[in-house]
Image (tube, rainbow, N blue to C red; front, top):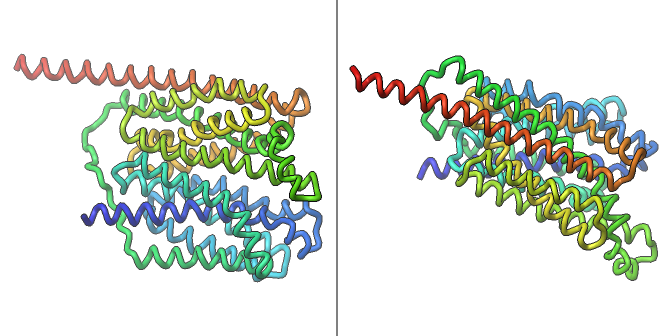
Length: 420
């Protein structure tokens, strides 16, 4: 009973942390127009104010993961809650541009703690890792999609500074509640003390390297789709804009609103996919699930490149269902290939690859659009997906080789004991 209660507390606070990470990340761009008017800056200059925040959110992941392994995952999540929230409040209170950039950067730096610490704590302290990671993924997606609405509402009530302060207070209270609730950080599994030889260790490292390449390619594809999807729907799936246009005098506003609604619908399917993938990750072999999910996305991407209207929205929903469904499977694989004492560091490596290298999709998408077309981005994504599928087949083959070697060694050991 005590273990189940602690698991519940871990899931509640890690989900809240993941929600706030994505909420804080989206709050700044959601309030870009009010910031532009308040600070009397061009919109492009407003976006530049957040550069260090987003940079530190990514590159801070690895050192944050190392520190989380050393000083405790639970303690690190509390530091994330308190540090990012106080920094956000200070950004709202300052009237100096340099200080505003500094406090936004500190918000990003403290936020970089979230992913490695949260996923590390889930993988150590919760029995059904896949299900928990699926729920955690949904909480992050809710933070991402709700930030524009909540931010706009708070801005309407009291301005952008009020929106920052109220949001920061929620984070502060979350950290205080986590301290009061006394979440316990303890391994729920028995740690194996079986010694492994150098060949086994090298094989495990080899598998983690292959997985890292897959995660990097997946991050590129994810970022490329997230950049293209709203514009592509606005251009090629305008069946809803006519209906909304009858309620609005501005055709442009109706197009944007219609695209936003359809993108939100597609992401709702993605949230369902995260839950579905998490449930399956606790019941079936992870690598084969990983292959099935990514292989389904390959033809879906190809079809998206030539689709339009309602069919494109449906294909986009299928795409997000399976790509977001891979995340709990993938994060379960990271847990499988790394020892508990380095678990958060491993997740730190993952998120540097996904957020860091994945950000180059901004330039790749721009080049493809200029050289070919917007639709060609989905052809490029399809190539990435088939490449990932091939790499997963290689991962399965490498793992099978290791399993066969271990079986042969155990059989030889058994024969030796019998002969003695």
